[in-house]
Amino acid sequence: MHNFTRVCGLSMVCFSMATAQAQNSASNPPAQASGSGKSTVVEFQTDKGKIRVRLYNETPKHRDNMVKLVKEGFYDGILFHRVIKEFMIQGGDPQSKNAPAGQMLGSGDVGYTVPAEFNPALFHKKGALSAARQGDQVNPEKRSSGCQFYLVQGRKWSDSELNNFEAQRGAKFSPEQREAYKTLGGTPHLDGGYTVYGEVITGLEIIDLIAAVKTAPGDRPVEDVKIVKAVIVQ
Image 1 (spheres, rainbow, N blue to C red):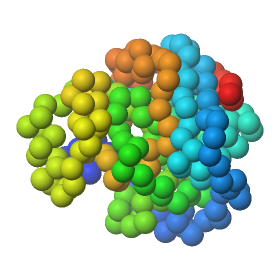
Image 2 (cartoon, rainbow, N blue to C red):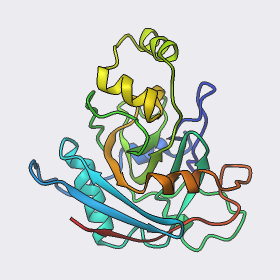
Image 3 (cartoon, rainbow, N blue to C red):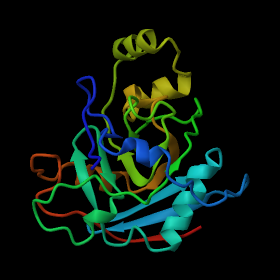
């Protein structure tokens, strides 16, 4: 079983070690269509409201995999099984469909991973859509889960905090990134570690509603928060 763990004192989004080697050697996702031009928009119809996400053309493997799963109805009925206020809301575990109360979730997958598609221009601002993954010990290539994702809530950061992050990672935030982290918020400590492949264009307030729900040990909401249906709207 691979559940999600906390790493280095921060709530990170990654699989544990138990079957990670098998996951890394699993089959790849379907052949990808390269693409630029018009963006794809996915609408997650949750029982807290609707969230629309624009998928980035700069991350075509993740974009096409998400489109495939949405068209198959994969996300319909799946829970946001892991919710951490001022961090993120996470979903995509197929085992969460009709899961009884109290069941530990986070180990479900689709049998393949997606190669990392890091782009320094795509970052973890509030509303970012990013891929969950296994930890670095068993996944040095930082390949993404084939189905689990998270939407960033995060918090606002000060210049001094951002300066510290720059010193730690040896790279500068762009003016746009710094402004976004100061005014909108996000999770800058995840940049460069997890593939960001989309962003919320409507429904940021729904992320806040979901992030505020009461959770049990393991960060599963006490009352289920469900993706009733996911559809391609553009």
